[in-house]
Amino acid sequence: MLPLVTHPEYSYPFPGEHRFPMEKFGLLLSHLQDKGIATPANTFRPGRARPALLRQAHCPEYVSAFINGTLSARALRRIGLPFSEGLVRRTLLAPTGTLLTAQLALKHGIACHLAGGTHHAHYDYGAGFCVINDLAVTARALLASNRVRRLLIFDCDVHQGDGTAAILADEPRAYTCSIHCEKNFPVRKHNSDLDIGLERGLADDAYLGTVRRTLGQCLEAVQPDLVLYDAGVDVYAGDPLGLLAVSEGAIAERERLVIRQCRQAGVPVATVIGGGYDDDRQALARRHALVIEQAWRLLQQA
Image 1 (tube, one colour):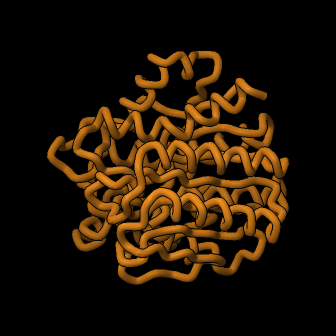
Image 2 (image 1 turned 90 degrees about the horizontal axis):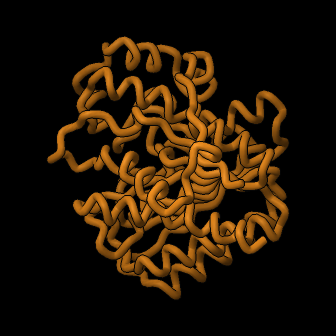
C-alpha cells in the first residue's frame, strides 16, 4: 500500500488571479483518483495542529498572532497570501499532514503528502507563501518523541529551504540539504548543512547527475532513519518562478531515482510536493503527481 495524506480544506476559496495556485491540491487528488492511485483504502486525513506542536519549531507569539488574526500588515505582505479563516484552517492542517506522512512512511517504508514543503517559514515570521514550516515541525516532533535518531531533509524545490535551515541550525540530528537555483528567491540564503546552488538554465542531465550524487553523499554521511523529500516541481523549464531548464520527463526521473536510492539504502521516505506555479493548473497538478506516480510504480514492481 502507498499511503497518501490529504484534506479537502487544502484547497479553499481563493482569488483565482493570485500567483499561488491554491486549487492545485484538490486537482492533484482528483488526478490521482482518476488514475486509481488514490482510493479510500490508502487515503488518510490529518487533524488540526495544536499550538504546542507548532511551538516546537516556531515562536509562540507568532503562532498565536497568526491563529488569532493579529499579524501586522507588513508580516502578511511578507507571507504573500491574503489572510482568511480558510488560510488559518489549511495552515493548521498541513503540518500535521506532513507529520502523519512521516509516521506512515516509518511504518510502510514510503508515504506521500499531497501538500507540504513550506520551507520559507522561519521561527518567528512567514515568507514566500509559507506560514508554518511543516518540515521543521515534523523534524522537531519526531526527534522529540524519539521516533527517529537522525533524519535527512532532502529539498529539491527550486528555491532554497532557508526557513528549514534556520530553524534546524542548532539541531545536529536533523541534516538539511537544499538543491536550488542560486540566483533566485530568497535573496538572503541561510546555511543548510549542505547547499547546492545551481546556475540559471541548468538542464536535465546536469541536474539529474547533481541530485543523484548529492543524495548518495547525504545517505552515506547521515545514515538517516527517515528522509523527508521536498519534491518541488518549480524546477520545470516552464515554471514562471523557476529559472531552470528541467523537462517534465527529467522531473519524473528525479522522483524515481530519489525514491529508489532511499529504498535501496533501506531508509523510509516521506514526500511533500513543494513549489510549482504554472498558470495551467491541471498541468501543474499532473506535474506534482509525478512523485506519487513514481512511488506507486516502484511499489508495484517490488
